[in-house]
Image (cartoon, rainbow, N blue to C red):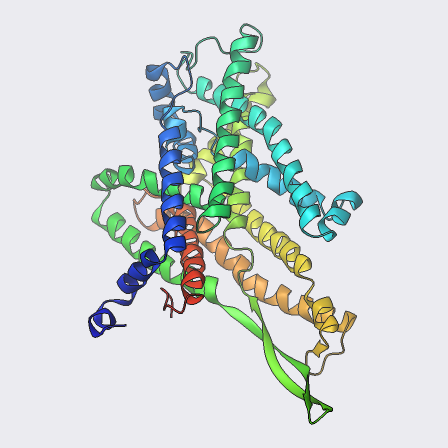
Length: 446
């Protein structure tokens, strides 16, 4: 490396090194091209949309703003990608829950790559009916918020069954196309494709949020800035934090025709936040459902049904803005913790660390191999996961506390969105770091 290159900032030099490598440059450009395709699809509207009614619906509902941000603005345009990849995420949640419970799925998972591929195919097929159901629910909810005008002409199962089916098939095709794009990024680009698409959707909506800062007080703006810097630090800290469990193993070597056994030492890096950002995505996907379902029953004419439905709609929309009773945030906090433990245990069981150690002749000092090692590692994983779960829960409900101390309402969704953005960037940088280190270049991260 020349003296001039050595004097360049580390990040800039790493980017230059990345583009010098043909295969790394190809992966980066491919990922960028897929994001451009995603943003193009997000602006292709479905047929027969009443723009005035759609605009009125978004003015009447803050929940629609929330859904639109996580779809990259596609819902506000009512494009073919309005559902985003969230039906696929819901399908993944269901399959993750069923896999440990259904013997055939559990057996398929233990078969290795072929079994996991079959489970992945089942996840894809399950995402199709879920897309139809979620698309119908969201369109019914949008119509309910439009002030009486129909957002989509020729929509309604009773009056326009074929038009409704065509609309739902269009939304489903858009979702599956995005899933396909995500898998192309995973196979041929840099990073996890589904996460990259969610990241691209959230980032695309951020410029539109900046003008809204002019409506905030000085305290609110300062709270948002402080929140952003603190969150970046906490995300990086918890994403990188790990518990290193010491491991000893025996090495065999031949010298002079004789075999010698030597003791070596290593460690198992158990991450504090092994689940990453997945629990937040899972929790928010679940929390979207109650107000949408409840909106179907707000005009039934039955007193107790209407009051219950209105309670759900009010609590789950008002609480998200930081001014409700806190039911939304309390349930969200619990769901994040539950999903963190659930997803961590799924990830840990798939690794089968104790069995791998026993096969390799390695052991943890003071712990017998086999079931005692499994029990010990499970205790360690459970303890450190509490820190990761509480952190993710705190990030999820942080906008609620910001709303209590300031008027900062503009970026209330950004707690989770910001976490997803930082986590995806960090994970992508690590993968790019690995690509560069394989070619003897210094990467982004020290």
